Length: 151
Image 1 (cartoon, rainbow, N blue to C red):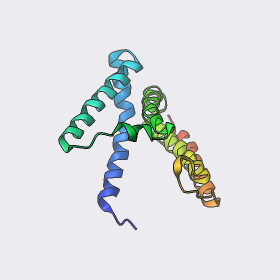
Image 2 (image 1 turned 90 degrees about the vertical axis):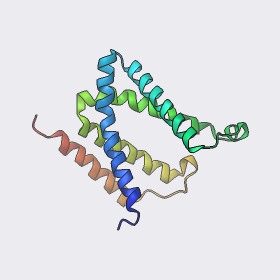
Image 3 (image 1 turned 60 degrees about the horizontal axis):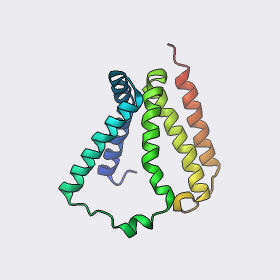
C-alpha cells in the first residue's frame, strides 16, 4: 500500500524524466558533434540550475571541516553521473530507450543487492535471500523478452 503519494508521484515523474535523458543527451551529442561536449554542456546547465536553487532557498554551504570529514567515496557520485550520461549518449540510439532503461535498472538492482548484503557505503546489512535472487532472475527474463520484440 502506498502511504506517501507525493513522494511516490515525484519518484514516478523522476523515472519518466530519467528515461528522457538518454534521447536528449544523444541529440545534444549529435548536434554538438561530440559526446564530451554534450556532457559538459549538460553538467554546466545543471550546475547553474542547482546554484540558483541553493541561492534562492538559502541552502547552507558546507564548512571545510564537513568536507574533510566525508569518506573518500562520496565524491564518486558526481563521476558516476558523468559516466551514466556518457553511456546513455552511446547506448540509447543503439538499444532504444526501453531496453537501455531496463538494463540500467537491472544493473542498479544487482548492485543494490550487493550493497545491502555487504553493508557497503554505511548501509545496514540485509542478507541476500531467495526473493532477491528471484527478483533479479525475473528482471533478467524481462530484458530477454524485450529483446525478442520483432524489429
